[in-house]
Length: 336
Image 1: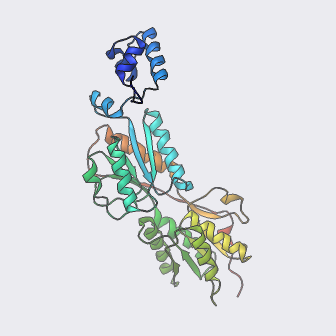
Image 2 (image 1 turned 90 degrees about the vertical axis):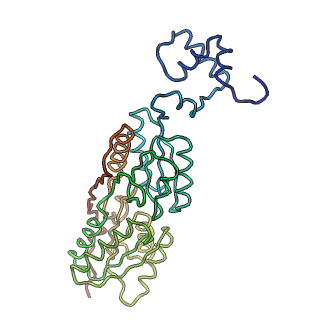
Image 3 (image 1 turned 120 degrees about the vertical axis):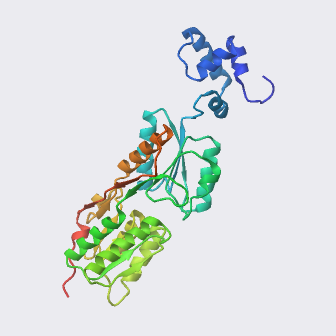
């Protein structure tokens, strides 16, 4: 083998002293090769550090599949995205499928780049939490199946696995209203994000039903912005007695602000999305919990059904949310 060139199957065959066909059968996982020959091939593969060419392997398969899928999530460091990823990966592992994963960081251009990169690597399908308002770009990169998770897609057909965001937010705010609160502030994500719009809609519906006036602070993309916004709310002459926060990082920022102001035991807080250690804070944080494990498993199963040939119009799978009362959302308003 000359210079620094990448080892080939021919190099493996020469080193092992077997035919090229035998190497091909071993590399592709066939079990009809005699054990002693298979062992010689494996030893040569390890010695040469040979890595099969995925594209070539795909061409040799009748179904042209690579046993890989691509997953594009908002931020794999976020607890919600991490739980989605793990559930998808568990379903993929059961089928001998590898997962390519990337964070889109709410950047439509990043979404397009990752989708293109994964399809160039011949992924058999994609699971996407859309960041932009238009997914028509997917039609130009591949005809593989797509499943949307957490948020609906637009411009390109695909099954969608969604949480009951509107009703979950409405339940949270109704819970605060039932506890006696009349000044309830909303701290929310960017209105360009579908889930943020839906949760704000649920907030408004609950207040309208109670004949209360809304106060909203939006476009909070980081916990530090949520902390600052919360501090600002309590500089007002009529500060809220309760907060509804639209996602876990915003909840963390709001709680930090309330604690700085020594109001965390006097102002009620309900957050959308659970997060690690929420039950260990003082008070423990009341949340509207999504079920990312069920969402991830459902998305993966839907994708594998499509990869397997299932046809028909796009489907929607609605995964219910659950209000978990822990203490922070049950703080009563201070007496006037």
